[in-house]
Amino acid sequence: MQIPHPGSPPVPEWLGQRLLAAGGSVPFLDYMQWVLHDPDHGVYGSGRLVIGPRGDFATAPSLGAEFAQLLAPQVAQWLALLPADGPLALVETGPGEGQLAQQLAEALHAGWPELAGRTELVLVEPNAGMAQRQRQRLSACPLPVRWIDFAALARAPLRGVVLAHEVLDALAIERIERRDDHWCRQRVALRGDSLSLEAAEPLTGPLLDQLGGLGLLPLDGSRPEGWCTELHPGLEPWLAACAGALSEGWLLVIDYAHEACRYYAPQRSAGTLMAYRSQQASDNPLREPGLWDLTAHLCLESLQAAARAGGWQPLGGCRQGEALLALGLARRLHALQQEPASRLAELLQRRESLLRLVDPASLGNFRWLAFQRDSTSAGSAATPQAEPLFLSMPSP
Ligand SMILES: C[S@@+](CC[C@H](N)C(=O)[O-])C[C@H]1O[C@@H](n2cnc3c(N)ncnc32)[C@H](O)[C@@H]1O
View: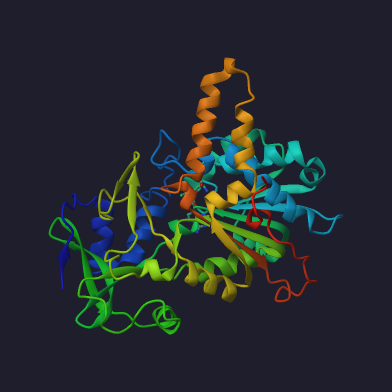
């Protein structure tokens, strides 16, 4: 069954050769892995992608330091709960341009010097092209910094906090489609001189069974022919590897996510997959492969299940707008009015950035989800419990 994607552009030579070598098609998962993370051709792997308001897309830390300054008390709350005499780690996964890492290090150094004095910044970035730019940005970081992978961290786990800001949406997904009364894997196929998305072999396996078993995705015929969505096979291994990096501590995931009832709603007939480049969005994942970022939302229930299985205890979550208000965003906005009018241009720009962070139509709708390392499975003493600051009521 072949579904040509309208407007598919010419196929780059490297991709055409790989598809031919693979017999003409590969699961969407492999295609997404290549176009994002291939060291030579992937948009992240090559370091081609630029994050920021003048780059391919903006993220919260790329709008200025306010986001990190608001997040810093949450990081400090968690670090302060760990043993008072030992070294601490702030681990950032997928640091992109390195802005959040740099800004958080500065905020901790300024506001919590004792904690900062015991904290190292640990960056987990699989893409060499991105890591190179992070090294440049962090060359004058006030905390010691190192780059490492989860496998190496598992040999000497740390105490601290892991941040995953807009990382899990970059993990390659499996795309599935309802076809002939089955859930079928979508493949990317080379047809003539263009690419097409095809519903191929029926898919079975633990992920689909789990979604069906939890009642998140109906496995019967209640979705029409051609209806498609995403599965996240990379999530649980990633969360388990991430848990292995800590003997004690917390994980904060900040990302696009929906509850399963919205994610798998009948009217969402093409999933959540989107492509971004040069501040443009597209729903064509085959467009200029290796030049566009591809991203898929998370399913909240699947994330919680994967986190539990991976060694994390969910502590709760909320939307970014609520989290930032709890961390003092309204006070910050108010304080801008007291600043001297001579700095009007800068103040207006800061005000706009703060409002963008909580705008319910965009960044304010991101989800913040906290997890505590299940220290019993790590064989260490129970870590103190405390309600995350970002889940508390905003102070008046
Ligand atoms: C959308 S960017 C987010 C960058 C940054 N966190 C921000 O919000 O500005 C995704 C980042 O995750 C990295 N990444 C992709 N897959 C990853 C993985 N499996 N583990 C850690 N980082 C990953 C990418 O190279 C990139 O740095």
